[in-house]
Image 1 (cartoon, rainbow, N blue to C red):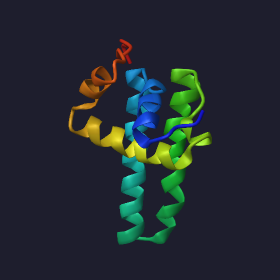
Image 2 (cartoon, rainbow, N blue to C red):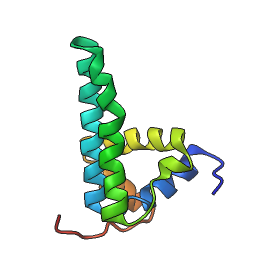
Image 3 (cartoon, rainbow, N blue to C red):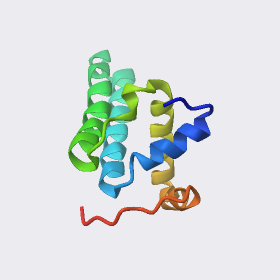
Image 4 (tube, rainbow, N blue to C red):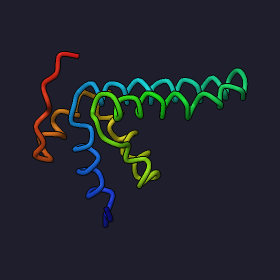
Length: 112
């Protein structure tokens, strides 16, 4: 798929993260990546090794085993990273559900 703008990709990205647990796994992976990045700055550069593994590991797990689709990272790595941080920020501030509704997507109800 070709996207003309980040906003176009964002709508696709949100659609690929329709289940709440997929978004939660992404949130955890992004949080761990940020924590490992800070640890690499303040403690040891060896923590840098864990930054991509924690971020991608949690995210890819959620796509393959929860959402049942492929990660957007494979086709659009840079835009996917930007959208991941945008989703993280919206989830952190409690605005992700509002964004899903704005885009016309209905959140999938899920127990876990």
